[in-house]
Length: 451
Image (tube, rainbow, N blue to C red; front, side, top):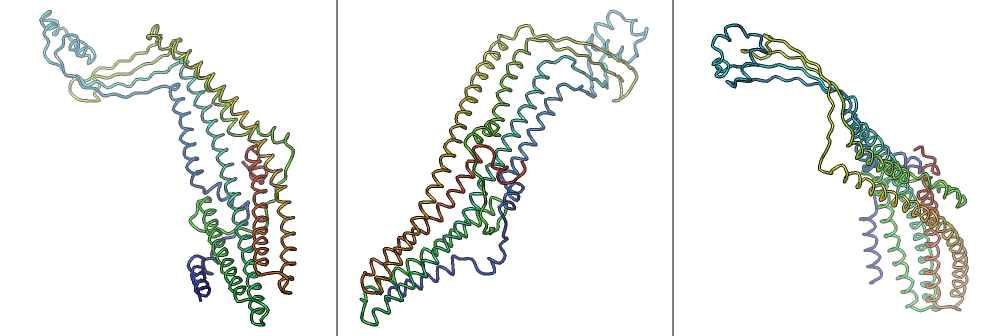
């Protein structure tokens, strides 16, 4: 009675957990290439990265703006009785006359209040601005480094899609394994029941077989749930809110020699990005040294003045100029900036050397992992064959009353574990190969994806 109650509960769980036939019919079925292409264009992290990269590209324009001319328009109102400004305002308005000299010097020392609307259009162009040139170079280098970082992020997304794609295939195989386990457990229960009815077996054997059947059905529920979650996870990586199914064909990845991967790892995107930032650390030293140099440029202005209305032109004037600005002493700021830049170059150099060693280790570890997973897969396949033969022999012995139901259930448990182990090892091997491509920077090339 208890066993029957347990079977009913498991059936209800299946109705709740598993997707309906209509939901399964709506799932898109994609190949690995299609899934990666969709993820590279729709993944939320990559889309955010594209916006960040575009924002970083604008820093180049900002840095370049310091090298381009500045054009300024200004309208200014002034009312004053300051002797200097009052005299200057009348001159700029071109209204100064002999009458203004009549009361001199009192008219100069104590002028009546005067208003002035000044309209000006001015420009300034730097011809020699060392910090601006270095800043422009640094902005371009940082954008180049950001592009390498973004390319590395694309490789990471491709790896995660590959893992999830493979996880769905593995989950499907686990479902198939659990279904085989259910079929085997159902057959064992049938045999146990038949033996009990004929008086050759025990009632307890029949109960054990029914419990084993319920346990096999429970594993099937878990496997189907894991499959449904994996499908939604793939859709999430692709920037979708729906579940995505995958084709059955396994990816075919070629494994090459360690020397090949060690060589390609030197071109890994994150390493190239760090090398670019190391060069930018040297540019920071150039920036500090540029502070010792002057700034040279020229400029000019056109001006109109009126005593009653804005934008008036009672008086008109223009001027052109050249300038040299040279900061001779800044409180030793430049000396400290120069020392700081040197330390930062040394720091970046240490990090760069450390990253190269780390990448070399990661490639070596990933390559050994591939070799180990291949051997584990072979061992798992051999173990499966042994488990299948062992179960066959024990079943025959049980049918002939030469073994107990416990022996049969133990061999079945061993067979189920062996089947699951083969599926797991097959997925682990392909994942290890993909990780080797990721660590060496060749994963997109290995998967046939254009960077």
